[in-house]
Image (cartoon, rainbow, N blue to C red):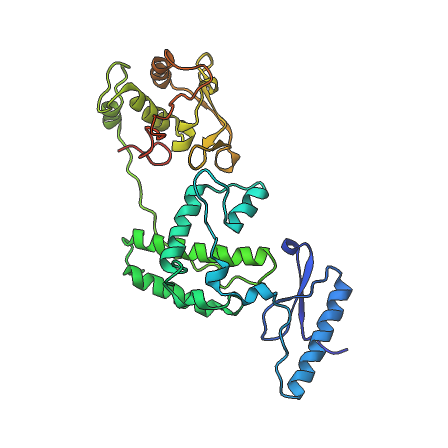
Length: 333
């Protein structure tokens, strides 16, 4: 019995479809979920390959969908497009949301800016030649060279450990590109992602930690002592975020019915998503936290004139929160 000249791979992430690979070639879909049928397909492919080799011709690749012949710029045209107060145009965002996943408009808009800046540009200019290539013809070498061009355009020295910002921008740019290819795979247009695992490693900047003396200056225990804060509402907002370990959008979405003064607890069940979009918080991490006494006293001061079911920290008339300039998990300036 002769040695097999192909390999089969049953992909659970493709509904059990078998993929075949000949020596020196990439994986191709057999469009078969039955192993005997996939083996028959592979055997026919091997035979056709031998005939083509004997007559000196290249075996035509009919496994790539027609969409794989469009340019990267055309295919990525709507990626990460998500206007405020509207449904996303981005096919990736729509699929993630439809499958029960979570993705924020802010993230999409950030990635969109990177795509426009470094890859697809606008209707008149294309920043990089990679966008003019057909997505089915782009290989890993193309993506590696593209990464080098992005790094050069940013003037980043990847060996410089302090060049965190530039390396982060380059890394996110490669993540955006990889997402485009990953979505093409999900939709059966490509078999592999040439931009996978090309993000740049960088050391995240460590945030400082306040000592006890600094915290006492920032948050005087007496509710009538504002300290450095302009008003009781702002002080209570940052005190709640810092003392309870809440994300900015979790504090914004906190309602009075979630504050249990009697038992000393906070029920964190939602967060703002995008522009005025309350919903389940990141990764649906609902939790109940202890309510420190100093936080409770400051919140009770606000509750005197508050609506029972309203937000603890309602947004102002310009639709922005007192936490609009704050960072995640109660970072204070």
